[in-house]
Image 1 (cartoon, helix red, strand yellow):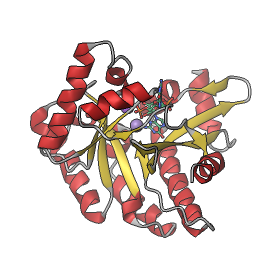
Image 2 (cartoon, protein in one colour):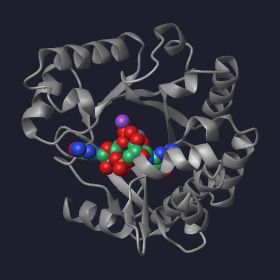
Image 3 (spheres, helix red, strand yellow):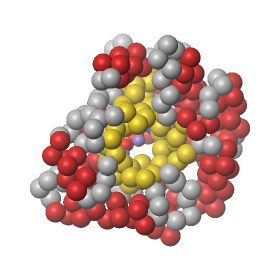
Image 4 (tube, protein in one colour):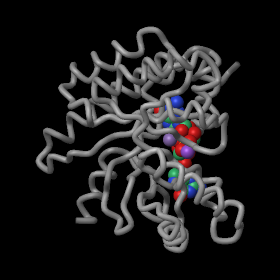
Length: 254
Ligand code: G
Ligand code: G
Ligand code: MN
Ligand code: NA
């Protein structure tokens, strides 16, 4: 397709860019940032990752794009560490199932961290439940290797996918991310509030952290806090921004 062949050229043509969205505590203090990929095409305009990531996965382009994202994230971490402000953030990078399954994923990650001299604990990977559809033993083994190496994991979009609670306890996770579909209407829909509450209780029972996505209002934050969730991501706190704007926002907030 047109989109696929355009995507094939996107890295070379410098159309891809990393954006960064803050992860915050209740007071708005920055705890880290999620890396969100953006594609700016001169004719097609801005193409959403919700559109092009599935194409990248299907075509196998995700291998090249995914490793480029990890590399750029490490590069940004190195730049921020060495900058005057010595920004010591942790970055969360979305990893698609196919990318994670790739045979050389682990050596590639290790090599990239070392090449940029980035501390291993500065990186977190966000996986979705789709990773659990196949080859679970292999996934758990690879996650354990990376965890022992120092890289942390979050389970993204939690509650929307293939959730098997028996798998959940086997995964070396640092935190669960409550999907924004449960946050959107948390003030009006008791079912959404019940699901959010259950995910929060589950994370507590398993000794995991929990962060809510898509928090757009103070009232949503307060409802989540009342249920025991104290970490947030969403437009109420900060929007995804290019690296320089992200740093500028961070400095203004101080
Ligand atoms: O940023 P936005 O909400 O438009 O992202 C839409 C979807 O694309 C989300 O599910 C997000 O996780 C995914 N996404 C964004 N950047 C990346 C990336 O670098 N790699 C992968 N695999 N998915 C990404
Ligand atoms: O699937 P994942 O959780 O990685 O997707 C993150 C996506 O959510 C990004 O595309 C980001 O742009 C979007 N996002 C982040 N905060 C908000 C928010 O407060 N409201 C909405 N509608 N989308 C958000
Ligand atoms: Mn994510
Ligand atoms: Na999500």
